[in-house]
Length: 217
Image (cartoon, rainbow, N blue to C red; front, side, top):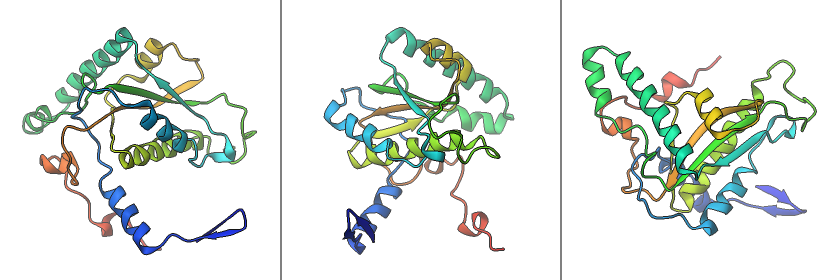
């Protein structure tokens, strides 16, 4: 329960069940329909992303919508180069499995969002990051996750493309030097719906047991 403007706000069991359902269906989407995304759907998701927590209330996230065909082609070319290099880093057996994976929807997704951290921001006055300056980056990650959940709740799919050269992406998007690329997102309506992660479904990596990721001290 929360107090909002002096009013007690309760999140009941039904809401918590729906929230768990949303988390379970927040999947990394790589297969998109090409039809346009309604601005009346996209803009509320971006506004919700801006409600994410940030160190010192610095709000360092900077979303860049990439619509120019030449810039999108440059990002896709970066992905293809990095993807080829990544495949070559595996042994023969794992390389074959890697080659079967669809790891990006750059050509199909109607919306590309590059998400940067403004490392030169004066907002927040440095609070909370003197000993952990990386908290600025982590703050941007919370905004990405908030956007992802909002998009899913609005029926959109999101795919995070990390197989990119961040310097090449920053250069082709002509952003300020102090902006550091944190995420490159493909956004659109998914072709198919799956509750299980694609990498589990295609045999790349199973989900880890909770006992592996939660330790007691």
